[in-house]
Image (cartoon, rainbow, N blue to C red; front, side, top):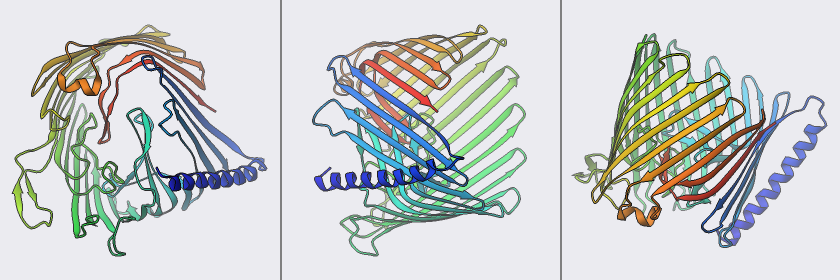
Length: 504
């Protein structure tokens, strides 16, 4: 980040603070002011290097009649001097009085299933995709019309540091309409214009538009969404086109549920090299995507069966790959892609309650990854597992074991994990966990190091009904983690993590 951008960010923070202060003063003078919020503070200490990670997020909400002022104060301080700390203040002012809802400031927005727009917050995965601007929604006659504009910002946590991964001069202009006027039917349409600083001419902008149709009657539910992407190639010029399609249907009876989803993405993702302003859904339950809407086709098939009231069986097969037949860049010639990348996921899960106190969960997960974890070409994971929970009244005991057999192009190895927890509801939970890898394949050495075992103890303590303290001591093996199609490699960790969460 250059000096100009840093200066702009500081100026924006000062402006935001000033606006926030003005509204706080005006609100405090009101007699019916309601204040709520929460704070989450984290401290990590890496034992080997004595590096530290200090993070704090404070959220406040002040409401008065139809007005709500919300603010977020974020601070992250790395211990390495070559890493710049990240701090910002976000705010949003909302006026809500049916049939109108107006928001100005920092907000999140998802259109349909995310093919056109999906700016969201995932606090567990430490991903914050938001928009700064205004959004207006009208709700009339079982229909809603939303209009928004603003500048998006994507914050991503990777390699133990937060990064603002996009150019915040990008601009979004969008409108969406949804209606339930027709019984049992949902109709929707949306349009978005995306302006970038790197576009060469005023006509060189990106458009995404789409429609959706949903139908529900009795045990049957179906949904179809289509989106069209009209853009241009950066620097080189030339029209870029793409399509996205999602279809899902489900049939539910007493004790039996069937579901099917179909996904087809061809150059629907837009944004930048390592970030998106739309995040097309992935059928893979572990959250992996092939290339986030660039070239993907797949499905998800699921069966949920309960032959007895205390027995439930889930079976699913989910798959997504690149297309076998592809057009060239100018969409004129077709070529065959013999080097497919993709993920196949097969899951069997059985849940049983032999009595009121005991719950058993067992299953097997098979995952086949083709060209997902480089430098290997193919990786097969077969993981049987067993979990048990026993309720002793005020206290409970949990235990689990999993054994992951892993085969790649160049090696075979396995991971084991066993955990035991004991706790009292709304007071504490103490967990002991031990993970072990029998051998370290060469391709993992540079990414995850040479450790073979990771013991860990964690205590979660409810100090009061509004304050929770979580302390974790030990090791975490790291590896590829994904959520909603977004993936990153987490580095191994050995040390102490302390998290204090408060609500008020």
